[in-house]
Amino acid sequence: MRATSEVQENNRVKLTVEVDESEISSALDSVVKSLGQQVRIPGFRPGKVPRKVLEARMGGAGALRSEALREALPEFYAQAVVETETDPIAAPEIDITAGEEEGPVTFEAVVEVRPNVSVAGYAGLTATIPSPVLTDADVEAQIDRLRENDGELVEVERPILSGDFVTLDLVGVDDAGEQVASADDYLYEVGSGNIIAELDDVLGGAKAGAELEATGAPEGSDPITFSVTVTKVQEKQLPEATDEWAAEASEFATLAELRADLSDRISRIKVVQAQMALREAALSSLVDLVDDAEVPDALIDAEVNERIHDLSHRLEAQKLSIEQFLSATGQTGDELVEALRVDAQRAVKVDLGLRAVALAEAMEVSDAELEEEFAKMAEQYGTTPDSIREQLDQAGRTPEVKAAQLKSKAAAWLVENVTVVDEDGAAVDRSLLETNMAEDEEAITAAEAAAEEEE
Image (cartoon, rainbow, N blue to C red; front, top):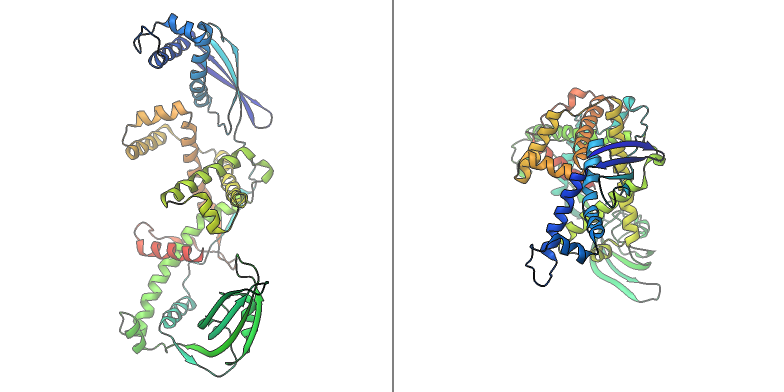
C-alpha cells in the first residue's frame, strides 16, 4: 500500500491511497473465511462453504469484492493516516477511483484536519499566580480560624451586626399565601445569605424582639415572604491568643511554637499552590492568543461528546442517571451541553495553542522517546510495546501519541519561559517555587483540599 497527501482549502487534506492486488486478495480471503463461519448453507459445515457457493449466495463475485472493500478500506485508510502523518478531526469522505471490480484498488479520502493556529506573542506571556511568600497576615488568619473553633456565643443587647448569630422564629409563605416553611428557635448567622439575601438587609440594625418581613427567592425556588421574630442576639467571642489557649487548642505548649509550626506548614502549602497554579496560568495566557474563529466546530463537538461520555460513566458508577443528575443540579440537558461546550472550547484552544508552540519552537519527538512511551503503555496494559504500537498503527492513533508528547514538551517550555507575577502584579522570584512536590505529600494534600473547598 502507498499513500500520498495533498493539502486542500478549509483545513482539508486529500489522501490518495493505492492498494496492491495482493492486499485486496488477502482482504477477500479474510471476508470469505468470516462469511464461511457465519453463513448457514444446507449440506456444508460452518467454515467449509466453497468460495463459489458464497459468491452465488452473496450475489456474485462483485458483491463479495464489495463486501471485502467495505471491511478493508477503514484499515487501509488508518494505515494511510499513519504513513502520511495526517491528523484528521472528522470522518473522511472516501471515493474508490479504480479497482472496484478487479485489480489493484485506488481510493481518495478527503478529511478535515487539525489546523495550525497563530499564537503570535507566545514567547512574552505573563502568568499570574498566588504569591508563594508567607506573610504575618497568613499566619494570623490561621490563628484566627483556630480561635474561631473555640469561640463562644455570648448574648448582647446592641443592634444586630453582620456576623452575629440571631435566634429566629420564622414562617415563610409563597405568592399564593400558602405556608411553605416554618421554624422556631432557628439559629442564623447574619450575613451568610443562607435563607435569602433580603433577610440580612432587614436584620441589620434591628434588636432582640423585632418583628420583620423580607421577600426573596431562595436558590432554585419561587419567591417566598418570610415573617421573622428575633428572640435573641449573640456575638461570637474568641479566646485570646495566649500560651494557655495554644496549649489547649494544639499539641504545642506555647503560642510561639504554634506560630512556628503554622508558618512552616503554610509556607510549604503556599509554594505548592503557586506551583500548581503556574501551569494553569501559563495555559490560560496561551488560550487568550488563540482566536475563536480558528477553532473548528468538529473539535469542540468531539470534546463535548467525550465529556458527556465520561460524565455518564461516572454517574453509572454512582448508580445515577443523566436525568437524576440534571434534576439534582437544576439544569436542562441543553444547559448542561452548553456548560460543557464552554469548557470543551477552552480545552481545544489549549490543544491547538500547545501544538502551535511546539511547531514554532521546532520541537520533535525522537524514536527513542516514542518507544519509551509505548513501553509505559505496555506496562500499564500488561502487553508488549510492539503489540501497543501495532494496535495504535492499525487504529491510526500513533500520531496522537506523538502529539501528546509534543504538547507536554510545549507546556513545559511555556512554564519555564512565561513571566511570573503575583496577584498584585509584582514579579515572583522563581527560586521561591523550587521545592520537591513529589516529597511534600502533606502540602499537596492541603493545597488540593483548599482548592476543592474554594471550588
